[in-house]
Length: 116
Image (tube, rainbow, N blue to C red; front, top):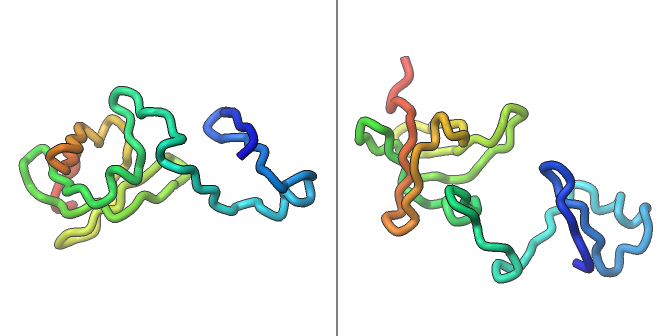
């Protein structure tokens, strides 16, 4: 990457070897990987998704829901996909995502173990 900037919720970047709009359009939808050490530190109550994958997910009642497998970006916001006995798709916003403890490898959510 030669340079980049934030634009809303997106990034606008200029990549080495991509010299015109046609070359850039050919990369639309492609993944661009950045070395971890090039990323800024996460702020308070901010986490890189990669750091959360594999953590155990528990609800407020102390029930284990499973392990965070991946995220899905939906129109209304990101969802945590948690697999245990059942699969749970949990909104990743503050209403449902209550705490993250990277040391304990645990996420606590406000989400029932079984939906009626």
